Image (cartoon, rainbow, N blue to C red; front, side):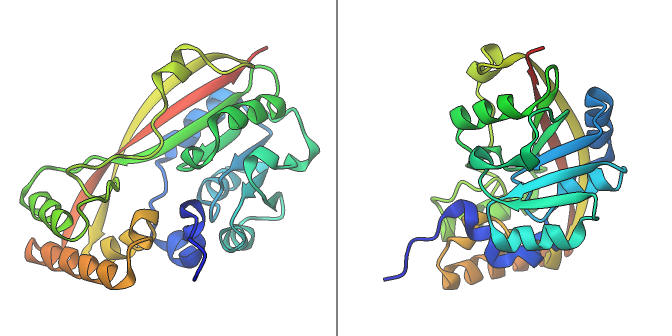
Length: 259
C-alpha cells in the first residue's frame, strides 16, 4: 500500500505548473515590506518556487530561501540570482545561513504549514531586534454572480467535503492569524501590525483549471474525481463567456521582534 501523501508536500508533484499558474502579489506589498523593514537581505520561508523571493530579488535584495520540498526548491534555485541561496529544510529546523540578525523574514501563503509555537520561537531567534516577521496570504474574494453560483453547485456535487479557498460557498481559507496571536504576541515579539491590500487578476477557462491543479485540496482528490470536477468547472466557465476577473485581498500581519 502506498504511503499517504503529506498535504504540505504535494505541491512538488506539480512544481513547474505551480510556478506558472499561482498568482503573485501586488507591487504594493513589497513596497510596504521594504519601507517598513529597510532590509539589506531577506529570509524567505516556505519559499515554494520562489515567487516572493524573486520579487524581492528583482528589487535588488539578496537573501536566503527555505523550502521543504526538493522539487519546489529546485525551481526556486533556477529562478533566483546568485545573490540568493536556497535551503531544503523545514523552517523550524533551518540553518538560515548561520545568521541570527535577519532584518526581515517573509512567509507568503505558507505559515499554516508551520507549527505556530516552534515557528514563532525560531523566528524570534533569527530576527534582528525590531525586525518584522511578515506573514501574508492572497484571499480570493469571489463576486457572487451566476458563474459563482454554478461553480458552488459543482463543488457541492463532486467534492462536498472540500473546503478549499477556491470553492466559494463553504470555503475555509488556510492561514487565519488567531486573535490570540495578535492580542498576545508570542515570546520575543513586542507588537503586531496588520495591513490589507487589494488587487485583481483575470482568468480564462484554461488558466483557472491550471490553477486548480496546483492546490493541495484538489491534488489530494482521486485523479478520476479531480478530472471530472475540473471538466465540470471548465464547462461552467465556458458557458459564462470563457473568462472572469477575480478580486484578491492580501492579508498582511507583521510580528515585530522585541528591541
